[in-house]
Length: 160
Length: 169
Figure 1 (spheres, rainbow over the protein chains, first blue to last red):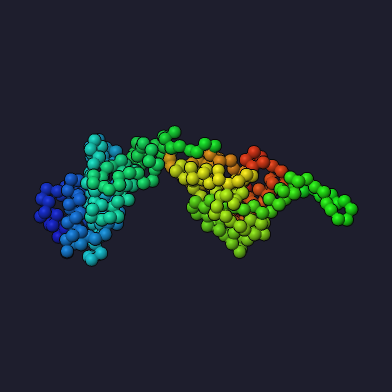
Figure 2 (cartoon, chains in turn orange, purple; figure 1 turned 120 degrees about the horizontal axis):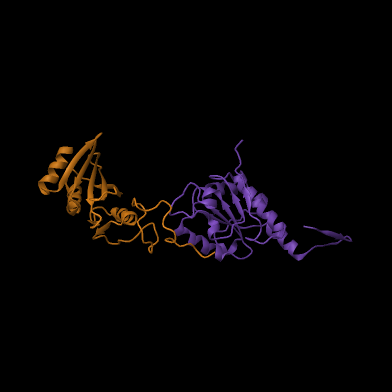
């Protein structure tokens, strides 16, 4: 399964794979972010692989100078009972990632959550706005430089 | 309430005391159930703990028909505006019980998104400790509100009551 996934991605997107890692039976493929939507579309549409279920999509902040953020896609193939983790790395200066809402509809809210918490923008998303925090909030709470107790005055309370 | 018997056929008292007596035995709760404390609040209304013994079995899901708000759960900054709006819609005199650790102080959610105690935006009369509090402790909170009414106190202005956590036996 692992080999056929890697082969099929390399055949169609020859320079997309950055690294392949397998740990305790969990396959993780790091790919270039500009190809992510096309790769996901191929993984879902391929009759053998058939990754028809997107189980989770989330962000991560590594707080490093280069490629600070990651977006992680956890996929599942109901046909093959196989899980695959895809990752893309995002620069702080260029927070744009192609959306996968066209591939899996469920990605809509996951991408909104990732935007809300990390400020990563998903290009082509039909409704790119915050999902948890109030819309006028100006910060991204899951970034490592955001203080635990928040920024005083950034969230309003009702008048007493 | 003080009643004086005069003759055989009537009693005299103060109008405020009569009204207070009626109010305290018929508090209609607004169940502001936001998270897990609401489950204990349901148990408080159910047959085992049976809040109807104290006249508060008529839970109203309309604030306009309620005079006691039981805030049961974690109040986030986003939710605080909703809680305040519902509180504003309740008719006076209205009382507030802060049920559980989250509502009273933010509880285990020491976080940017959770209000560290609802008394930052609404006046609270009784705080009930516990995570979640046992239903009998919430009953105690209700009885403290009844005592406040019987003493003729004003909502939000009298001394706060803090009810300690009870232990299961």
